[in-house]
Image (cartoon, rainbow, N blue to C red):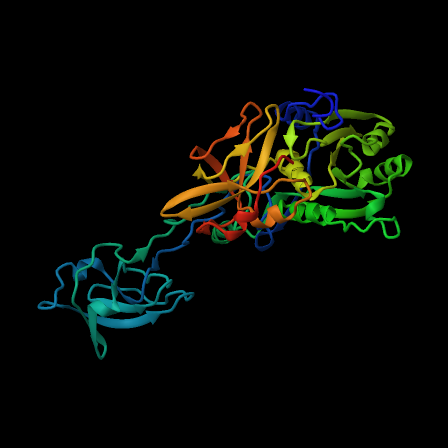
Amino acid sequence: MGRERLGGFTRLEKYEDALSRLLTQVNITLESEKVLVTDAVGRVVAEDTYSLRDYPPVDRAALDGYAVKSLDVLSASPSNPAILKIVGSVEAGETPKLTISSGEAAMVFTGATMPEGSDAVIPFEEAVRKESFVYVLRPAQKYKNVSRAGEDIKKGDLIIKRGLTVRPWHVAALIEAGITEIKVFKKPRVGIINVGNELLAGGGGEIPNSTGPLIYAYLKELGCEPVLIGVVPDDVEEISNTVSRVLRDFDILITTGGTSVGGKDLVPEALSRIKNANLIFHGINLRPGRTAGAYLIEGKPVLMFSGLPVAALVGLEAFVKPLIRKLTEATPPPEPTVRVRVRRRVTNIVGFKSFFRVVVYRENSELYMEPLRLSGSGIVSTLLKGNAILIVDENIEGYDEDDQVSVTLIGPIYKGRPEFLDQEIQTPP
C-alpha cells in the first residue's frame, strides 16, 4: 500500500495492536471515595458491597387484611366461616402492641409488622366484618400473604460487585440493605485541548469548535470529569508548553487537530519535545480516524485525535472508552446488537478496520440496513441520522446486497425506510 493511500503515513498500525499497547503501558490507579447512595448513580463501584441487615427486618403484611393464626382458618369457607374477634389494628411503620391468640384477629395494612402470634393475612375481600368480629370466608396456610423477614435481602448478601456501574435499582437495594454510603472510583479527570488557528477568534477561519464540546459531552456520558482547556494555535512550542503546564491536573489529556493527513504533524512533534515523552502509536488502520495517536508522558496518556468530529468520535469509541473502563475496572455493559439484511452494498478498503454509521429500519417485519454517506470525517449529519454502527474488519472488502450482518444499535429503529436515504451516496471517508 503506497504512502498516498495511507494518508501521509508510511505505515498504519493495526488497531488491536495499538489498543493493546495503550492499555498495557497506562498504569494509572484511580483513588476511591465514599458518596451517598442517592448520589452514586452512574458511578463505578470500587469494592464488593454486602448487605448490613435482613430485609424485610421482620415479618410483614404483604397486603391489606386481617392478621390471623392460620390454624384458626384452615377450614374456613362461605358456608362455614371462621369467626374471629378483632382485637386491634397495625399500620405500616408501627410497632405492634398486641398479641394474637387463638380466635382473634387484627386489621393490618400493607407493610405493617405482623402482630406476635399471627402467621397469615386474610385479604379484606375474603372476609366480612360485623361489628367487632370478622367472618373469614377462605382458608389460609401458614405465612400466606406474609413477607418473611429476610426473604428479599439477607444480611451478608452481595448487593453490587466491584466494577459495576450503579443503576437506580441498586440504590433501592442498597438502602434496603442498610447502606447509606458506597465506595466508588473517583471520576477520571480528562483535559481537552483543541489545536488550530482556524478555531481561534481572529485566527482567519470561521470553523466552529464543535469537536471539543462533542468530546466533552462524550466523556460526561462515560462518567468522567472533562475540562475544556481551550484552543491552542498551530504552534509547536505553544502546544508543548500547554500540555506540560496542565498535564499534572489530569489523568488523561486529549488533543484534537494537528495530527496530519499529509501536512505537518504539529501535535506529535510538540509532544515528542516534552521530557520523558514516549510514543505509544501514531497512525491506525481505522476508517475514519487513521490519524489517531498517543504518547505516554510522566506516566499519563496524551491521546491525539483528528479535529473532525466523526473521526474524533471513532477515536473515543476505539481508544478512550476501553481506557476509561480499564482505569475504573468497569464491567462493560451489554451492547444491543441485531442481525440485519444489507439493502445497499457496503464497500471497505482491505487493510482498514472501518466504522460505518448505518441506518436500520423495519419493513414487512424484517430489519434492513443501509450505509450513510461517508464523504468526510466532518459529516456530522451522519451522527444524527445513523442509528447503528457496522464495524467491518480489515480483511473484509465489504458486504453485498442481501448479506446478513450484525450491527450495534445506538438509537431507535426506524419504522419504514427513511426518505433521506434516497440522497445518501456511500463514498470512502
